[in-house]
Length: 147
Image (cartoon, rainbow, N blue to C red; front, side):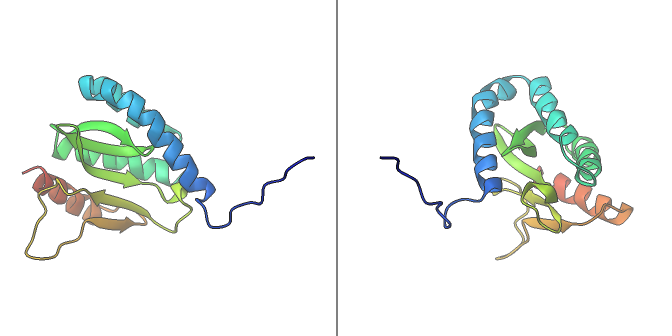
């Protein structure tokens, strides 16, 4: 007798499952990237190249901004997306809109970023496009995050 499985409608979405698989693969490569900056950057650039437009252009420009603003941060991937770490801890990251089929990309910071400002401060920013004004703000935030 053949058994059929009902689809679990409350489980993870296809995008979430793909992100988890990508992260599992990254964990295997993470040790290599932590020891070798070039390997981490190579993985990051490959992730950017695999993105559809306009995410690819935005991620590429953000990579230029972050590496110029905080050259000490190590480029790597984090859940399949570009990220930048210090001492193995992700400080900031980009999430493409296409990753989860959202209407905007995000640029965010983790708790090791030095952005504390009183009792509340933003840690993630929606991005629909990058103009000179946004690029300047991102550069300043990245510099502050690593200060």
